[in-house]
Length: 104
Figure 1 (cartoon, rainbow, N blue to C red):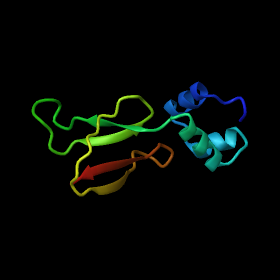
Figure 2 (figure 1 turned 60 degrees about the vertical axis):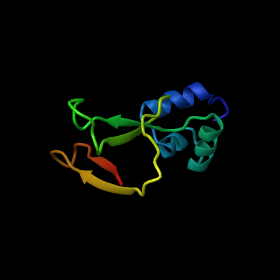
Figure 3 (figure 1 turned 45 degrees about the vertical axis):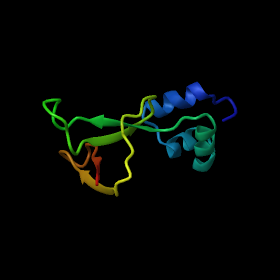
Figure 4 (figure 1 turned 30 degrees about the vertical axis):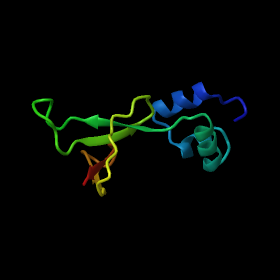
C-alpha cells in the first residue's frame, strides 16, 4: 500500500474498483483505502443522464457517481428523496445494477 499514489488510486477507481476490493488487493482494510482516497482528493462526482435526450429541459434527470473531474449535479435547498431499485437482467450469472433516483 506504500507504493500507491494518487494516479494509481484514481485509475483503479475509474476502472470501477470499490474501496473494499482495493483493500483486499493491497492487503489492508477498507477504512485505510478510504482515508488514503480522501487524502489524495479522489472523490466521486455526479454526472447527469438527460432523460429527455436534449429535446427539452428534463425536470427529473438521473445522476450517477463516477471518479471524474466535473460535477454536473446542482445542489438545491429542496428536500431530497433517494430511491434505490435493483434491476436484474437475464440470468443470475449476469450482473445486476442499482438505479438511484434523486427527486425533490
